Length: 426
Ligand code: UD1
View (cartoon, helix red, strand yellow):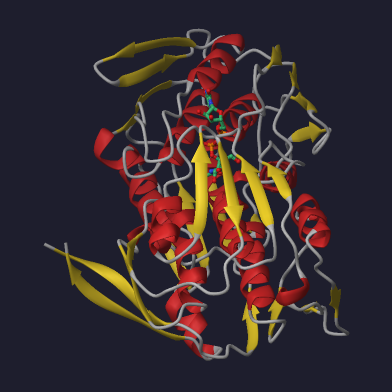
């Protein structure tokens, strides 16, 4: 069997501007939220990614009509949900598909959604989503791998919900469910990620009454009707972070368009601790002013927002390999998110993992090797390492990378990277 891989010849000077695309993790819930009200929507600045194509198939299977207007814009026509079942075949491909449960219940009807199952980085249950739906008055049962939800009264009832953990997905699912509930919903310990604020801004543009975004306590005053609208998705902070690391590795020869520093504070603070100096130029481009040779290791613990994002843990680890001294990363969000470590070690890194802590000792250079992407962000970490390796690296199983980075090889080639897409036998 053959799969697609990147062939990357490291050491080439990379120079130019990289533009950050729209956020994947904001696009997914916003696309799904269009299930909530009949009408015509236009979404702009949507990244061109496998996950978006997977989601479009799922939404079409539920009855929506989706038209691509240009590379990054879509028209979504909702003339009623025609199928209440989100199948295992579609949900297993992408966990975020489980978010269709919220808007389907908000419509006062029934929903049958496959349990997403585990994934490479951990078990990832949906118990918090279900507790939230039950608090809003839905009847939930699990049978044969599917979650069935029913709203007997025909509408959800506003309620007070305290999340045991600020799960991003559970927060989004419950918010979408609650915007049309009767009365007021208060959600405490809600996730504060910027993508959730983007979802709330979209829903508020449609006439929802959500307040408290970014504070950990959200109040939602239920409304009867929403008005479909046009909306432009926020830039992707994880792609921005990945590009910033690439720029640091090449001593600032790459400028980055579309960095929103307020969404990346914990990341930028850690980089500053390591010795990063940066500025925005007169065109708003992010420019690295420091040299990697002058940077040193630090300690990072992944946390819910505004803490350090787990999605930037693996790209940061690649950088930590190349700075002076020792670094430490403690992963607290997902139990199995160090799968890039053996691959980076194959490329000459010096990383030891003890339970959820990785200790990274600085090396001079990565050595080119054949490696395998185990998940999306792990894949990004390997591409970064390959760009700074001493020869030809093959990064296999890049379908993971295609889930979250728009045409990465095309964009890196445009700034001088020696990277091509090839077929590899596995
Ligand atoms: C989202 C992001 C993902 C990011 C993650 C954490 C999307 C599409 N994905 O994933 O890129 O890495 O946030 O920032 O936005 N949990 C439970 N019960 C639940 C739900 C979650 O125990 O009902 C646990 C999970 O197993 C995990 C932790 O909570 O250990 C965080 O998960 P969550 O915040 O829900 O992440 P996702 O929404 O899946």
